[in-house]
Length: 104
Image (cartoon, rainbow, N blue to C red):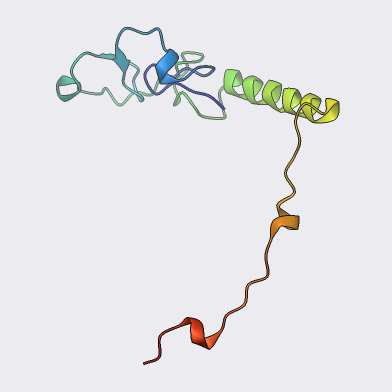
């Protein structure tokens, strides 16, 4: 899930953000100077304006974003545009030998 650490919205990252100022991740107030910001501690969501953190799964916007993302991934897997790695085939046997460790 892509999210911006400048404005706390989903769908883009900090380097692509069009917001002029950094926002507090809790209260979403604009921050011109970090050392001068006093957070209200009142949570506000950047997605829906609700009283919860911007990335919480209780947000209906986040829930829909994740659902859409999962659907897109499944479609890409079915069409062959995306392949799932099978890490079980890549595991190597681990063997521990006494000569691999220093003797006391």
